[in-house]
Image 1 (cartoon, rainbow, N blue to C red):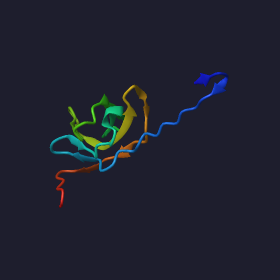
Image 2 (spheres, rainbow, N blue to C red):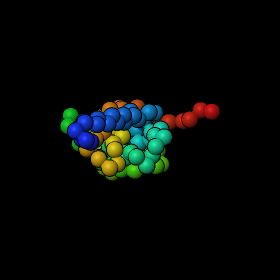
Image 3 (cartoon, rainbow, N blue to C red):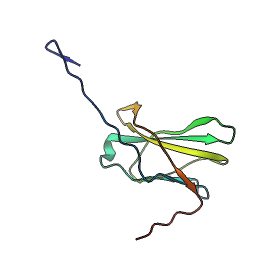
Image 4 (cartoon, rainbow, N blue to C red):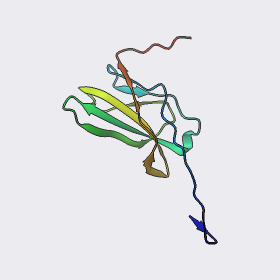
Length: 107
């Protein structure tokens, strides 16, 4: 951005999602909600048994801290990234999910 002949550069840091888990039984991804939820949206990519990545959700809401996936049978890996809601093509680093059947939160 230029103002009065000067270049003004803005830096934006997009956090990596934390505590990302994928429950195979419920086909649900859970994650720690970011502090500024209104600024971010969620990008979820799946790796299938055929070794190809596909985008499952792009710029979905991060408000609840969980999202159900459609037809995610045979998934071997899940990665989640936060993206800028106003610029969904700008995303932070992806985080691989821990994959399991049951996750229990201990006090």
